[in-house]
Length: 419
Image 1 (cartoon, rainbow, N blue to C red):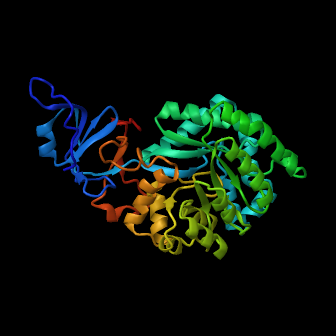
Image 2: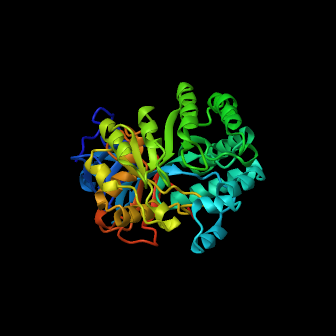
Image 3: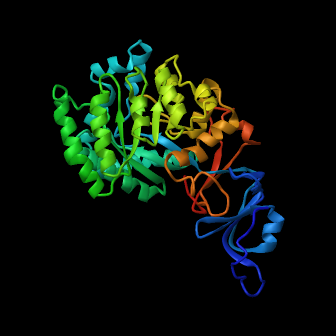
């Protein structure tokens, strides 16, 4: 049993230590910390204070609330390190276009893709967009995601990017989803600046990023380095501006073409560089040499886009490169809000073990966001964000697919009503 906080005063009458919640009777609570585990957990003020055997904890603690774990598997709340929730409508028609053989870039040239989402977000009022994003967060919560990195990127103007980030913040307050908001103003060149890329770059660097910083709407900045989006030269300008303003950096790179984005991300000390389906050896070498920039593995994207290439996950892991697993939840290339489903594709397409996939959606995702001291684990001192899953053991995480193993979701020790 992990050590309880023995300096707490007893409740007087019984001599027991008061706590807010005592979860008991789980099949097991996996904490992500060596030597810390059991089938029960005590929570006070939204924090885990002890994990261990239920009988022993009930002899130590006097809870205000008892939660029956029902023999379910207890896991840390999942963290999704790469999402795009600020979209107004889906793009289901494009799924048929893909079946006809059109590529991601060909769909964009037809007027679909990101530009389609931009039109929808620009025409959407802020309150309406907030309610849509809240709906997306509720989908994620029902699948066990209690915290996520949440990007803008479908506004592509100062006004609409700020609106998107405000909608993300408001939706977080409505739903209980913990967010780590990211400004992805450099997602794509808006059509009105297609022939004036440097003008748009000037606007987002000189006007938008300072406004986002002043209004405290994001903690990170991201860019899509790709043919048809941003090249490495413009990416450097954007990322260096963001870094100078105090933003953490996150980067989309090496998804369709390798343009040097991974190397740039490593050079600038980015928190993460994501996708990497066409990662070159120079990018691999840069990642392996630093082992500080996380790689975001997004295995449902190649599945959704009907691509054969996957990120070289096994090579990256063997080289000691830190990683996380995420959904890339968005309307055009991964319309899934489920991290258990992402874990399935990580195990099938990337050959990750159950343990590696589990770490990828909990502890490693938290570390990529700089919050591994409070999120992604259930040892004493960590936030009491946890899920109770209908899984016999960890080997079953990602084994089944097309179903949701998450039965109950708790944030700061309080169960969410997800009906």
